[in-house]
Length: 150
Image (cartoon, rainbow, N blue to C red; front, side, top):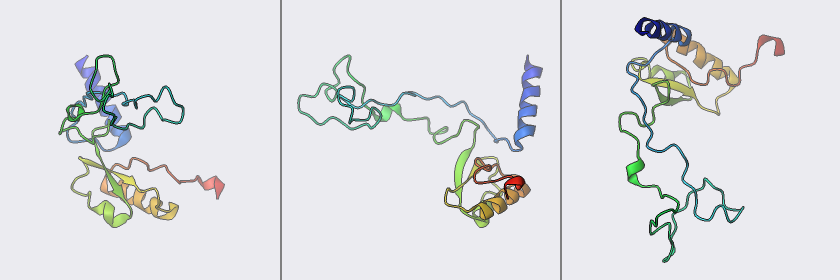
């Protein structure tokens, strides 16, 4: 089974091009969103828009048994895996080619993500340069049209 796992890992790295230097296991203490108090009662309150209850008699604020849980510092992620994407890279937002050159020595730790306001022309240049520098780009397909459309 070990050889099969190694073979699968080699195949997956060849298809993506760049693999992270270390890929620690990401453990989330809580994956569910915190529910806002009485969001089930009123449709105008979004379920996921957390607000801290401030009432003097509020049972959620007083942490009664069986009530909604409140966010607290104890739910924080491990410092080593905080902001880590599932593939083991950290995101770095890139606006132009010189920004990409900053990742030259850090291509095993950071993956470039092209900012949403970058034009298709600059996007193409960034993707080409990233391939030369062996840098992973998370959203390289965005705003790219095929040759037939032009």
